[in-house]
Image 1 (cartoon, helix red, strand yellow):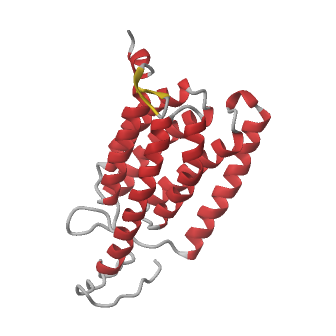
Image 2: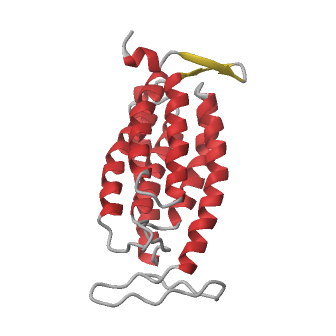
Length: 232
């Protein structure tokens, strides 16, 4: 039996639907990656890469081309995100990445890119029905995932909001596609995203403001003191 055959083999049954190994293993790795991202650990990126490799098999078995494309995208962006975090200039003393809120320009670019990207990919999936039986939700998840991971790689708090918007569509799509474990994991994702958002938000109030090139870093805000966030 090949590794691909094993990954697409039956693991157990949930809510009357079969769960395959790739669905279970890939999404479990995704949860681990999210937890590591919450802690701002560099290891979130290798975990996301491995999750993407496994989930390619899960989405291929469900004939969700958008899902397969998303996971291939995850693999590529995970490599880029690792480099961004590893070589980032805004590093904290504990070896994790400093986080911040996006500037107005960054938010505008992310929003515009997400909208235009969804229209382009959705149009492609609609024009070529064999790519997806649910073109617009697939396109939304595909592009939304890209936007979320780009924001995460840049250490932007907004990445959590992007994941929330992906989850809203991802939960019903996963269940309707015969991937119940993925649907349940999306629900857990949503809960963890709320906690991660809170943690990153509070962290922006405790860490020094990122310094521009050639400038000394701003002093840290004492614990319990009020602080206001200044966009970079």
